[in-house]
Image (cartoon, rainbow over all chains, first blue to last red; front, side, top):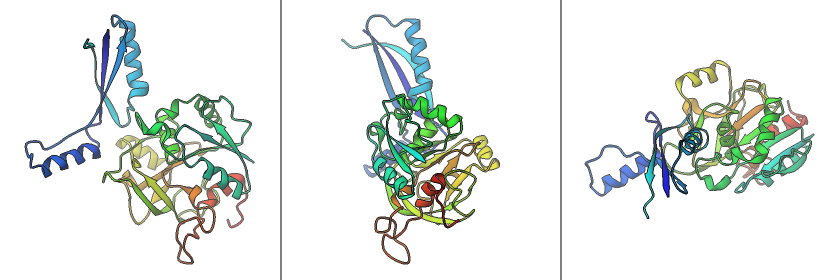
Length: 85
Length: 231
């Protein structure tokens, strides 16, 4: 078993209200070390057996066409990971 | 005039939209997301709600529904299509309208009677209004912040695609106070506020005359049906 991991983040120039709300919670807990929090998404596509180049090609297409919206988000990473047993 | 309303899993305002079409003098037709059949309708409404629980992104999964291939095809051939709230989100997700919709800048869900200015009456959905007319209809969403990059915004303004602008208060941080848009051809219109909730006295926004008497959303449906009398 292997996994293709796709990570999607809101575009840098856009306000991320969810991240901003978490930052507010950190400050209320008197954690002052971080000046920004941004929240993105991690998708795991699980594959029986080995990840092939064909799987990765499909994953790249999916990442652009469905899993992210290029107007508001960026795909920041597509990589293969071994699934934990 | 047959106007179809597509129900998706998680649609909420489909029946309100069907009723609005009937009150406007049209023939409402209930359509189903899983079909590939528009049942011969002359116009289409994608209603509000929370299709697929807003999972992935608002409207994103619904935008890939079976019926959307027919909806996109009809829209590109010039059929009037109105997307309300979640329906507007589906229109931007399917690429029929430019830009995107993100979480309200203040992070809160908002529900209020919202004043809008009608900025473009060259659409089948707004032809019954006067240019610059102010109307009040309900607004209720958590992810209604309209955004687009500078180049797209310039094009939207340059081609007069802004159809509705928030007036008085910008409730969600939408760029340029954009509440609703049309496509270049004008047949496709999307907006975050809800015209179908302001069509019947007793159930609309408050007005200076009486509580809940506002019916300024009805004109949108009368425009497409062709029954506007007060133009």
